Amino acid sequence: DQQVKQNSPSLSVQEGRISILNCDYTNSMFDYFLWYKKYPAEGPTFLISISSIKDKNEDGRFTVFLNKSAKHLSLHIVPSQPGDSAVYFCAASATNTGNQFYFGTGTSLTVIP
Amino acid sequence: GAGVSQSPSNKVTEKGKDVELRCDPISGHTALYWYRQSLGQGLEFLIYFQGNSAPDKSGLPSDRFSAERTGGSVSTLTIQRTQQEDSAVYLCASSLAGWEQFFGPGTRLTVL
Image (cartoon, rainbow over the protein chains, first blue to last red):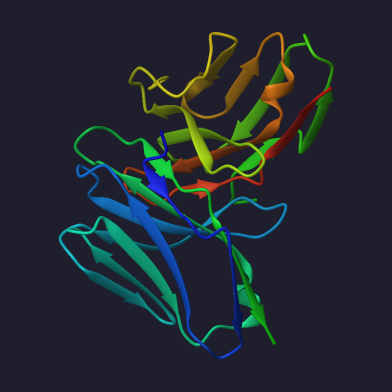
């Protein structure tokens, strides 16, 4: 039972444009969300997070939006750069029920120069 | 090396053999996680260690899987009597009491 879903396995975007990666979740107890970036043959690296008390968190070119009523979050990258080409994983946790994180299946982003 | 390290980076084994995968977390990190990623799948939680507390083993797929964390540092994931469906990348992550997990590069396990 996939509690965190990334329905787009891949995304291609022109350099300089906006990349929008989407993530949906089913468990209303989730209150902490993270995005990880993964290059081939490397482990995932933390990118940005958001707590359920917020609906937006921004860090440089990266912004995460959270819509709790829709159980949906998205990662915006603007402007997109070729170095952003990687697999992006969304993860969620219910902080009051332990520290288990649930990951999506990932979206492979290709930024075309 | 300040990051999480895992060994071996690649492991090929025959069905029915036992394997041990090692994880060296970042020094001082109290939490350690094991995940696996099968082809085309997301990261599947396996087990979580936090300090001296009993580990959360709720993600282990069968009793062939076990893990230990000795001295609150190095962890070993053991898979007994490996099956072909165990083939995956096994990832280890560590963290402080906060939420950001630092991942190792993973061990790619192939069971023939």
